Image (cartoon, rainbow, N blue to C red):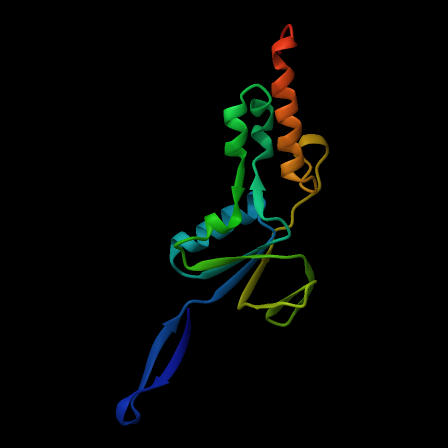
Length: 154
């Protein structure tokens, strides 16, 4: 933690600790794990930045094909993840990184002491992070509507 000096009554100088702010850019599996570890350690304030509004747990998507109630559990809003913790969620696309700040494509800036870039990879098919989770959930709903006509599921 970075020490911060403050001047109190009578000119006395007191040194306190200020938590560093960590910007976690990209909230996929790695970014969520890193952010959670930092938040639970109590040693950092975390600002999660992602272009989407929610994490979609794509690895479990095949289960949702046969169980419509399970499909709703796959979409986890980022804002909910940051409620009641020392941090915040910022939705946006990073335009550039500058010294100690992130500049988003809408012009907003996010100040940080440290940054973790956890943007990951691009995947194919149902685990494609660039796909719209709402569209995927709509497609799953259509499949659920027709599942009773299927003779077998492997």
